Amino acid sequence: PIRLRHGDVAIAAITSCTNTSNPSVMIGAGLVAKKAVERGLKVKPFVKTSLAPGSKVVTDYLFEAGLTPYLDQLGFNLVGYGCTTCIGNSGPLPKPVADAVREGDLIMAGVLSGNRNFEGRIHPLVQANFLASPPLVVAFALAGTVDIDLTSEPLGQDSSGNDVYLKDIWPTGKEIHDLINSSVKPEMFEKEYGGIEESNEDWNRIKIPEGSIYSWSADSTYVQEPPFFVGLSPETPKIKSVTGARVLAKVGDSTTTDHISPAGAIKPDGPAGAYLQGRGVKFLDFNSFGSRRGNHEVMMRGTFANIRIKNQLVPGTEGGITKYFGSDEVMPIYDAAMKYQAAGTPLVVLAGKDYGMGSSRDWAAKGTILLGVKVVIADSFERIHRSNLIGMGVLPLQYKDGENAASLGLDGTETYDVPVTDDVKPRQNIKVSARKSDGTVIAFDTVCRLDTPIDVEYYRNGGILHYVLREFLDRSSVEA
Image (tube, rainbow, N blue to C red):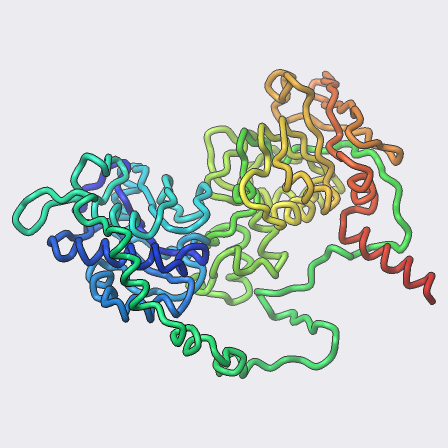
């Protein structure tokens, strides 16, 4: 049996478009691998390793530099050229490792050269994920743990039993520079990318429909016509108060856009997985939420479905579940949202500080509105997500300084009234009423985070898409 402990490295991945086309770090990683192999070091047997360069040219110059065999020997084999571990496409862990992690409830580590390490993103069983340069990814794969001081503790022992430290296998700047000068050649770029428009036979065989309007296919599980313009009137509607709203989710501080709209793996037993399987897609072909962002049916089912999100309406749990107050049942957030929509009940999200931090993911706002969420009340908002919420017609409200859900006695079981009106002004005070089940009303002031006049207009129109389309229709009618 495999013996593991907290902090052991389960995944070590040289991955990401961001830096795996950078010769200095890729040649550096290859040199670390070369020196490690020459000293007799090996990657720990429980570490899943992979190499996903950002360009085919990387493969060419690593081969030219004579470094590919050493990376291969340490398990950093080429797995492809695209989004892999960074987007959650890390694949399954070996079964003995996965079983040990579950049995011991272990916090395993991932070390990757990608640019994202959101909670639950890299792998469901790998909770502590660290971003590192490609050479350090190799180093941590050799060490087998992140619970180590690489400046003073050995990576392992050589074939003679002597300790080997990171400094012993770290290349000099001159070594890297010399190999770049001798191995990275202009003709490599010409070979891989010259005539790229004609070189991919599979791509060129795709049949393209005629006409200037996209031809939607009802059978596609990747691209579907989104419902953002359904029921759009040519006239700009008046802003109306939100009344009788229930809380879909109550989340804490630092809720990221990846908590709200995960880009990684799709669970087979969740609403999105059920949708795909119902359309004949096998689990092996699920791909990721990020790859299916053209299908709103998948993405809205994935909204608030991050495996690590903690909805305080269901204490002590993780994952995209909530309490549906129509029957007090616990169910997937998507299922509850659809029940609320069928009943005509608007929804609210209660949040802590820095709501929407992380990447500027548009689907974090798109999925929110598609679930029927009309208002988000938070301690504070990350600036881009606040803007994106308004851009999709969701009202962001912020507690007054010194107040929050806890200080106000809000637990999310209340029914909310938000008296926003057509004459709303940027950053005006809006007094929200929250009615408890016993009839007690908690009234509290919030700052309307429509920060500018154009924010107000976007919100009035139901979002920026509606605003732009109405502006276009108005200009077209004038010109006609």
